[in-house]
Amino acid sequence: MTTSPPSDNTDDPSGDGGSLSARDRRRLTRVYSDRTIVSVLAGTGLIAAFMQTLVTPIISDLPMLLDSVPADTSWVLTATLLAAAISTPISGRLGDMYGKRRIVIVLLSIMTAGSVVAALSDAVIPMIVGRSLQGIGLGVIALGISILRDVIHPKNLGAAVALVSATLGIGGAVGLPVAAVIAQNFSWHYLFWLATALSAVALVFVARIVPVSTLRTAGKFDFVGAVGLGIGLIGILLGVSKGTEWGWSSPGILSLLIGGTVVLLAWGWYELRIPHALIDLRVAVRRPVLLTNLTSITVGFSFFITSAALPVLLQAPDTTGVAFGLPLLIASLCLMPLGLVMFFTSPVAARLSNARGPRTSLILGGSIIAATFSAGIFLTDEIWHVVVISTFVGLGVGFAYAAMPTLIMNAVPPSETAAANGLNSVMRTLGSTVAATIIGVILSTQVVESGGIAIPTTAAFQLSFGLGAAVSLAGVVVAIFIPKRRQSYEHTASIPTQ
Image 1 (tube, one colour):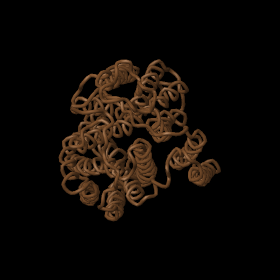
Image 2: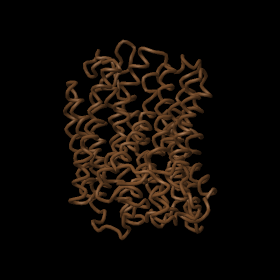
Image 3: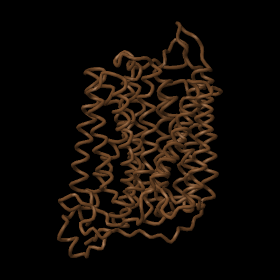
């Protein structure tokens, strides 16, 4: 059994960094089971992941709905991506310093506010603001995984981490059909009112049930490092995501890519020379952490291919005999098994990690993804082929996502768990961003005209799947070199158990 937070929602009632006696903690807290806590954090992760696919059903209609142009409405997606990438490592560090649960509550409050702003929007600027605030809230997934290390009994930790990690896929896969039904039958504003209600419910449950973690990192918050990381990530991610649209040789894209790289190099130099860095790069470059993060890029890349290529294959007009011309709702239902299999894989992945180590789960996951995409090169003729590809990629991603946070937590001190998981999340985002750009180029250049519509060719999808297989295989090779030996950092729950 594990204790819950104090009723006054403070993360450190003593104010002394977590030196409360067991008697004081019992007096200040109520008792909840590990299963209840995990359920709340997994539900919160599902809601956060749902925010990513929330606008997918209306993205093509946004210029009309917001009385704008496609170039401007594209920022509705881009702003969310950038906000999430920047806020996740920063909120992780804040969680390590001031309490992970406290920062989760702050992020959920911001997400709720962003949902309200978007729901009330009829113009592109407030919509971008609302979506940016929603993106800031996406850091709750990495923080939720980090909370587990502090408050869950060690025997339940592996399964809990696997389940919360799987919400990254489950929320999008399950949420897309729900969003499609709402968009097709009601006003699009209801999408954001639903997001508001879900975020508010998550906020209440986290504040009520998730325990306080008294583990803290000493020192001052690195504001300079946070600004530098934000500017560098904006430059790199924005340059990669907009390269095709603006032109890779355009001054704007070159400035973003070169400038972002220079800023990140300067940021790294600075972080190595201050006592309380935003991210401890000396830990980040240790072999287990570095190789896990590099593998995370490949997993994020491969996973996003299912979001970039498979919906096009299902929904593009069937006039050329390549795609299937399905409506959005049916197409999203065809892709739902990806998320469901991630959910059902999580306990199996946890048992494998406990028995053979998380490195084994990561290698197995990457191998399944590589094999699936390799088979997918020859399986593009039937709808059930797409369902099979989606399902088995979800199986592989389920094993990989269950393993990566555990590998990170085994290799970093408990006081740096949230920041390290936040950086790992950024690596997955980087892989997804690169995949979106490359697959977008492939599907937009290898096309045939039919009825005035450019439809990707069979070769375009085969190339996309072949690239996914190659990148996944590269990730497997990297993962093989992750050390088998666990670091000396042990799980220590900061909440007393009974």
